[in-house]
Image 1 (cartoon, rainbow, N blue to C red):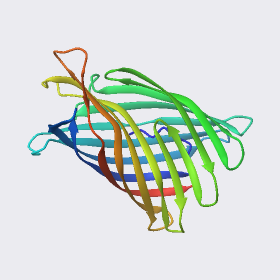
Image 2 (image 1 turned 90 degrees about the vertical axis):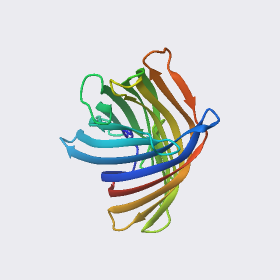
Image 3 (image 1 turned 180 degrees about the vertical axis):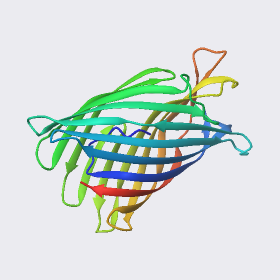
Length: 273
C-alpha cells in the first residue's frame, strides 16, 4: 500500500516484499475460505529543490492473489501508484508540511487502464519537532475509492526514545517499534492498516471489491550490509472484512473473516537519516 508516513528515521530507496496469509473462513463458514498471497515493489526518489523544499516520488506495484480451498479458482488484483510529494520546511524550521498527490491504478488481471480503474487521491501532513528526539504529525488523507470518497484523519509521531529504541509511524497507515539489538540485528513490532478497493472485469458478476484489515506483526531486520536489509515478519490479521459489490445488488455484500496468521519477507536498500 501507499506509505503516507514521513515520520520515520530512515528512507527505503528500493524494496521487494512478499507475504502469505493462511486460509481464513468467511462468516464462520468453514466451507468458504480463501488464501491470500501478496507481492510488492517500491522505488523511492528524493531531491532537494532548495533550502526549504524537498521533492519525493514513489513508484510502486502490488498484486493480491486469492485462491480458494482447492486452489482451482483464483482472483488477482493489481495496484500501480505514483505518489508525488513536496515537503516544505517553514521559517520556523521545527515545522514542516508535506503535500502529496497520489494517482493510482487498481485493476483486475489482465491489467486494464481506463477511467473505471483509476483513482485520484492526496494527503496533507503537518509535522512539528519538539526537540531532536520527538516529532509529532497530524493531517488527513483522501482517496476516490470505488465504493466512494474515503477521508481519513492522520496522527503520527517519530520518537527516538533511546539510542537503541525508535517508535514511529502515521496511523491508521502504519506504526513501528524498532529496537536495535546490535549493528546487524533489529527487532520489534509493526502495525499496518489497509483500506483499498479494486475493480472487477467488465464481464464479471461484480463491480468492485473492497478490503479492510489490520496487520499486527513481530519483525526482525538483518543488516547484510550497512544499507542492504533482509526483513522477516510474522503475526496475525485482525478486524478483517471484505465487501463485494455485485452488479445486480445494492448495497454491497459484506464478508467478515476470522483472524489468520500472516508471514512476510522483504529486501530493502535503506538509508538511515
